[in-house]
Image (tube, rainbow, N blue to C red; front, side, top):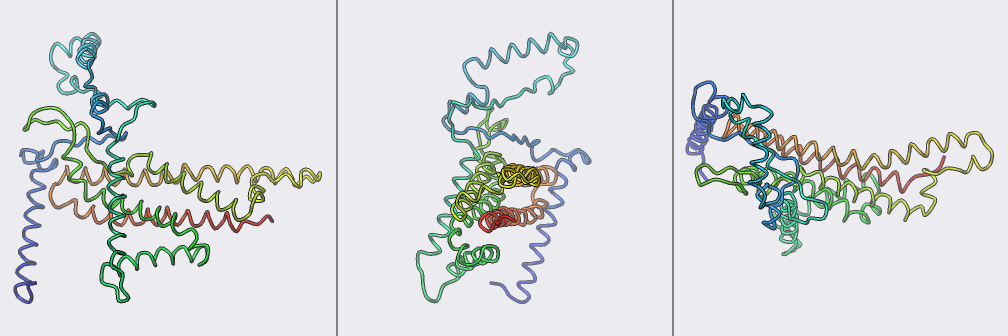
Length: 351
């Protein structure tokens, strides 16, 4: 490692390179290319919210519209466009707008395929397994740096759960809560490091120099609403399970409080109304959990991609730092709210 004057020179050189890359990125980015008339470095990005199939290849062709009847449908669409806008079509004023078409078709309910977001979730799961298996592979009384890191993370999550549920209950529910936390965190962070890859690798058409990417090979799992919805359902079922396990059938009294009404007390109507509100709030958690994570992850991906498009090379580093923080916050919020709702479920008392 350089030190002293050599370290200063290395830092100065690195700073000059960063500034040069920032200036170059601005000049060849979308903003600079419009200002200075330079050639744009990156093509305009296309972000598809629905997940795209990557296997089997028959599903890829179907979703991209490359089936056997693709040419017939394309010709039919062109004839329809010509019939609706004959002047523009004949004069060529359509430009690229006339050629633009919806080239992604979602798969049917009965069709199965591996999507790019599912592949990303598998990659994140594999990284999680490797991270903790390698961290616990060579356990020692005096832990090394990697083992210390893994133990610190485990202890931090367990302490967080203990502060909400108590030590005993936190240890009993730790596997599910920790899995939710790490899965959200690793998916968010891995997605950032895969941004350059998944924006450049995938399926499309054209040759080496005019290749048009239409389906990314891999894409952050958090941008697929199915993944946050699945986690929300896991959290919901987990909370309800522990509520029933702890309180038995009495757990449902907070939703269906008919006791006072059956005794002829007018306050029973209020109890029923409150129970309906409790039931609605319980179900609404699935929606709020889903779209909180989906919205933040999708917005972060769009921000990173657009900054890279506007000013390539260096400017997106600052957004990466922000998104790393956002990923951590989303993991803490998802796991933390699960703990809070779990605490409310197992400690619920009828007043």
